[in-house]
Amino acid sequence: MKEFNYHILVAIVNIILLVLICLFLLIASFSVSAPIDDPIDKVSRNISTGFMFVLWAVNYWLQYKSNKKKWYLPLTGAVLYVAIVFIALGYVSPFIRELLIK
Image 1 (tube, rainbow, N blue to C red):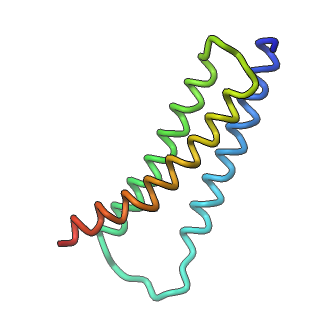
Image 2: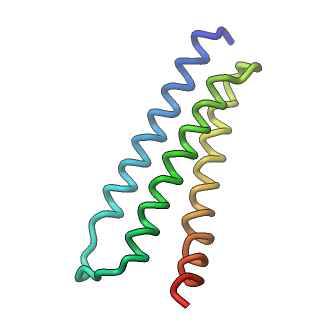
């Protein structure tokens, strides 16, 4: 695959990931329940947001600087990114939150 085509593919895949991150944050910001002033919840939300953006930036940089330039690398990186975020925010984050509350 030519280097120019590879960089376009990397950019498109990572723009899609960035849009999904922003949609997730937009949906997560709306709540039907009454607001609760919980500082641990605010810190947890900010850390989760930072984690998603830092992990996305590392993913993008690693794909862009890859020496192989194969078409499956950006797609594999996107799938791994989604899996890591779901595991980190779905399992690890609530566990750490429970440890901080107790």
